[in-house]
Image (cartoon, rainbow, N blue to C red; front, side):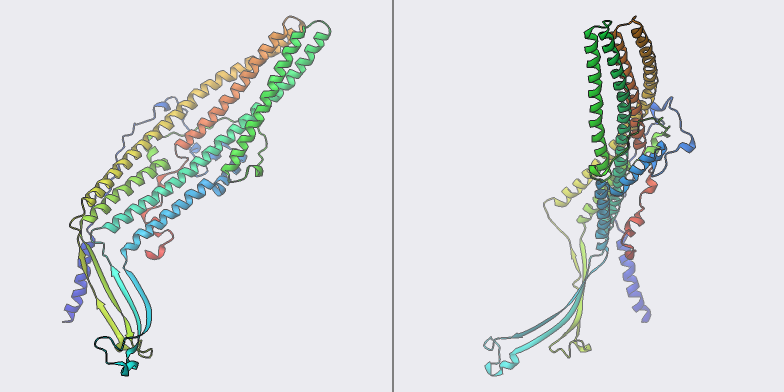
Length: 493
């Protein structure tokens, strides 16, 4: 007999375990992506040595710029877009626990105390002469348990979806971080490009002033015409205007960097440092590695996993809901008897099984909606991968072509400088006109500015390539399913 008593709860537990093993809906399979064996634009690309791999996390250190390093660290601490993304990640973690809470029964409890007097003239009453007996008290302390076992796996699918969404949110956070870091690096190198332009224009203005003074002296001695003086004056004033304009652009760029760091523009001053940096080589790797290295691709893939689990949630609505409940507590008419053993009461049940027979096609429509949402998320994932491939190819091509352009631009600038010296000597000797000097100097200035602008564009493309490759991030950095579930809620595991 004792064995039978032990067998019944064991059998019930086994039955619940078997029922709980049912999980409706399709199991998730990562969408297939066709990847080319290599990037087309990587041909002729200078491969990085192993020691030149992108540093994990602090990828900007490859530029070996201490000022940039200090600015980037502030982005991680104070950028408000990052703060918002981090809060959204914490929200996603909380939603995992919201979903997991459905695994457990709902337990309620609480005391109630009441005192009442029934009517002496009510049907069945014993009359007004016994009015004292019509007054009674009720002391009740009860609790209830209600539980819907996850027989069809609806809760498991919802938890699965919430975990995948939390992982997607974590990847999105890293994507925002990488975007903000990349934007700051681009702005920083643009600011230094403007500093270089400012230096070139400052030197040019000084040279133009000297040439204007020389031309005025030649005009005073009758060697030069007044038109030469006016032309030299015009060229000087044009260069001064360009110099002033670079100041406006630099100020705005400095303000943009301050905002990326989460600071008011008035709180940041970056000392002028002309750009003088060779873009470092970046290991491009192979296209299939990109699927593991970009947080936006990882986020899109996790969103697809979350959408797949929602199909199971929708399909579970086709099956009946099973609800188990129980109540118990103590009830008495006097305070002294309230918590005595004879005052106990309990009720097991009702145990209810409820099935929806007709709802006008609602469940079918919700299931189709979930399937369509999954198909959309898969398409978004594949499009994100294609965009990633495009961005890498674009910047590989930009770096390769701009490197060739830089060689031509630097050569042109050097030749223009030499020509300025030759023409200026000829002008002082009287064998060249002032117009000749002005023309070659204008060409030299344009070539110098072009050369520094090409260098700035090369660094910008370099940063964009690092960003397109994921900035040293990897899907291995994503929190696992278990970690997502334990994050902030370790007590439930």
